[in-house]
Image (tube, rainbow, N blue to C red; front, side, top):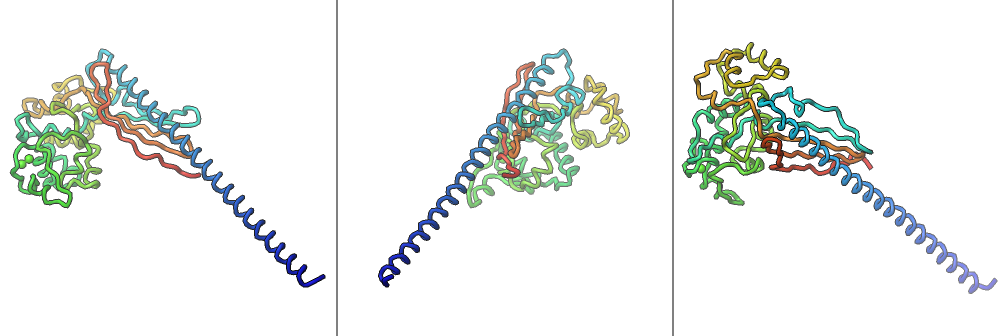
Length: 316
Ligand SMILES: [Ca+2]
Ligand SMILES: [Ca+2]
């Protein structure tokens, strides 16, 4: 064998090895990208299914609220069908959890503002008491007051235009009712942590004429409204109101031994028009949470806000 032929065979061998290596890399790359595409398509499909399932859960709750609204009862309580916790509902390949809560059991911050743009003294006292009961400095309410009131004069620990215009990204306070719950995050001092502490007892509703439903209000809201209440009678009421709700504010006063001539009795009710529907839909491996707040008038139920959280993929 000549030296030249040996050289040519060596070159052919190297070329073949190189070709095989490149082919192997291409095949592995193709298999990998196919797998990624498959997982992306799979998760996208599951996300879509979970989102649809979450909306179905909302529609289910709306149906229950409509039915309750068309009943002859003038009382909304924790004994109603909408308030009863349902077990997780399996639907197709997924499962959905639905919870309905009464937004009128909470303090609607827009109630603090009167129609003339001043602050309602008694609602302010209740809000301050509620902040204290939630372990918060009641001075945190001052910037809320300034956000709501029509004037530009800050409360002692408050903040008006001047403060907000000095921020890196300046804006002006509303000097009017809150339009969304998200707007609370723009108020001085109302950090995510503070808002988290208040979320179960405070809300923002698109009206300043709501009253607090004593049949559904959390303990702290009732304590803030009636700080003088006998604690034993309050506990007794809380444990029995699901089965035997009060049918009017007079009955509430009698059951809790409260004098009914106070202005606070004009701030409470036994009915509700605003509810929050929270659903969590899971189509493995994706979960989708959706919270919809609704307003009910007789048997008509209208969404007033939607809040979704991004789908959470647990694996795959
Ligand atoms: Ca103001
Ligand atoms: Ca002010």
